[in-house]
Length: 321
Ligand code: NAD
Image (tube, rainbow, N blue to C red; front, side, top):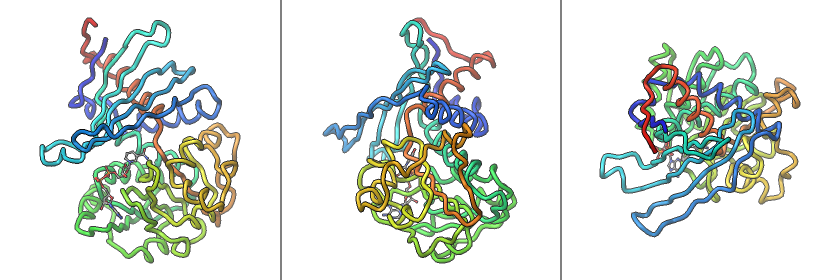
């Protein structure tokens, strides 16, 4: 069995590798070759923790396994990341455990890859201004991955705690791009692409603040009750997602569905656009919205790629199991 510790992940896999892996598995899901198993997530009644499993199987790549972990809110006091996880891969032919891979950095990379894939396929080609809502742990990964998708000329950002935006400014600087902290009105009026990555339970961005032609990647809402944009904005948009079942229950779409503004049939799997079965954006004025809920198959795809890279670079740690 191969072990890839958390500390080695950054040296092995790049955001570009993750984009290819996530794009591939979204396409496989749309071909019904890959599917996610039901998610388990439980409050364990200890350390205020939420713990669970996300798992699935891709018959095309033979990625089989699970990501296990969750959210430990008191970890900050211990100098640890709140989100902790490990990914277990199994041999699809024998059922033997093939690898254990650190899941913390990979979670950030695969989440950023998902919104980047949505920008690649749905944003206008002439997009120039990238708007960021949220400035937490995930936000810098989101920004880096997004900047690779279009020739952006400026980054603007909003966060409920404005001081946190300095981490986004640093990333923009690395790419020689100007950064400006703006109001939500200005963000909606100026951005061609908007990424939201917050832990909000109330709508932040209103439908009236977003102009025609915008692409939004709503990435923070991954739980029942969370919400980043007004349900009316979702209703005004052409909505795409990683998985419809998750979008309508734990994704941004849950609120528009709950209000009866859209139906599950209105939501398009991004994989169908990647496969060419759906045209994606069809006009420059259309608002497109990617409801990125985060599926286990994304974790398996990037973990499999990481293991392949560890093996090909001769740095895989093998243990008898
Ligand atoms: P974090 O705690 O580091 O940052 C949270 C961000 O949300 C900060 O910008 C904070 O200021 C903002 N925020 C918190 N409460 C808010 C409120 N009430 N209104 C507006 N903004 C608020 O978290 P993170 O690791 O950056 O993760 C951000 C979100 O992304 C979380 O909700 C997490 O569950 C979600 N997430 C989604 C996926 C996915 O696949 N879709 C994957 C990983 C994380």
